[in-house]
Amino acid sequence: MAKLTGADVAQHADKNSCWVIVHGKAYDVTEFLPEHPGGQKIILKYAGKDATEEFDPIHPPDTLDKYLDKKFHMGEVDMRTVAIEEKQVDPDEADRLERVKNMPPLELCYNLSDFEYVAKQVMKRTAWGYYSSGADDEITMRENRTAFHKIWFKPKVLVDVENIDMSCTMLGSKSSIPFYITATALGKLGHPDGECCLTKAAARHGLIQMIPTLASCSFDEIVDAADGKQTQWFQLYVNKDRQITERIVKHAESRGMKGLFITVDAPQLGRREKDMRSKYAEDDTAVQKEGDTTTIDRSQGAARAISSFIDPSLSWKDIPFFQNITKMPIILKGVQRVDDVIKAVEHGVTGVVLSNHGGRQLDTAPTGIELLADVMAELRARNWQDKIEVYIDGGVRRASDVVKAVCLGAKGVGIGRPFLYAMSAYGVEGVCRAIQLLKDEFEMNMRLIGARNVSELTPDMVDAKGLAYHTIPSGPDMLHHTVYSPLTNPAFKAK
Ligand SMILES: Cc1cc2c(cc1C)[n+](S(=O)(=O)[O-])c1c(=O)[nH]c(=O)nc-1n2C[C@H](O)[C@H](O)[C@H](O)COP(=O)(O)O
Image (tube, rainbow, N blue to C red; front, side, top):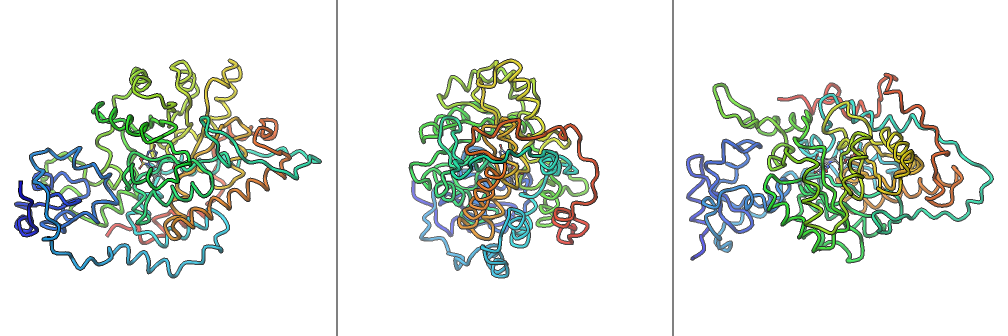
């Protein structure tokens, strides 16, 4: 079949007949226009043209193959005949680079909050709205942070701590330190190289990276960006179509993934108002008009736009399906109760991540660190502590948080937003600096607590009684309040 030309596609450039080109193929999206969660405007901007650059940061590469009926796949386009729109740098990217120029040099970032401050200045609104948002009133997102402040160290003195070994193993793979880069979607919203930035930094620092299902970079791009020696895990959102899921899992295993993290806390994505607000501000066709009876909720931000495939019927009865299709260790990511950890052991999974998705799902769900203390007590009471690897994530911003989690029994700790923030202005170098800052803090903390290696970080080195008390308002957390509050931040006022 002859290829289409740019002129063929350009004839379909309005609401009545709208074709776009993505990765050299033409798609008729006319019927899809009113359903696009991101609104119609953004698609019509590229009607009859090549939309690849706009499409890539938000949509996993196989989105159209998976979700647009084949009858709307119009065929290959001879890209030599497509008028190059003067290939200008994406205007958002030009703006980002302009803002980066006014940021402090990387060496002036001394902690992860510095990166958060810089990211807020540098990122475009949709990126900051998406990355920084938590669900509803963001109580859990804040509690993720303050929970660590309720745990106090009980340091030992006069321990010979000249030689410190921070290394550990997680799921049988070596890591230079007991934290990993966790799965966070849409990496290209914050930086044009997306998740590949995280891959390169993880390789340089001997860290494990968890690759998200909803990455902006394709899965193979991320694996190809690895150095061939580093360990990568795969985070899975289970698709309603189990055949798609099976294909994805088998491919992940064939590419060398050393762990399958099944996300179990998101049968529906949480309601994140900063994400929604930035979506509205960008494109008011994304909201339903008077009399518009379609049921699509187009007011959601990037999150809902990309997650309609997730299967809300996923349940414990599905665990054998996964155990049959892969030899990878299976970890349930997003477990939030002690009795579900017990069930996980009984179902023979290898591990759990005690997590509330960074506070982006059920608001006032418990924090991973608080749950960890209860989980380990129950596992030890049954002498099951060696039957399952327990991880936590959420709100980790200091190495002392990692030390506390390991003392309480965590095998390792996932860190999300800080690496996105570090990447937004400084790319790979930013993520490497963030990791190095944590390593320096971790080594110092081990010396000061009196532990020479990770196995000496034990429960008797912390006093975690304070975890039982949920945050008593202790006055505004000005650092974060000024970063998050829409009241002090005009950028978040809807137009
Ligand atoms: C910050 C962030 C987190 C996301 C995330 C996207 C962002 C921007 N996304 S989300 O689009 O669905 O919400 C994912 C995801 O793809 N899959 C997942 O398992 N967890 C997702 N998480 C949760 C993440 O894996 C950690 O649980 C969380 O980031 C840990 O909290 P901190 O960010 O405070 O470290």
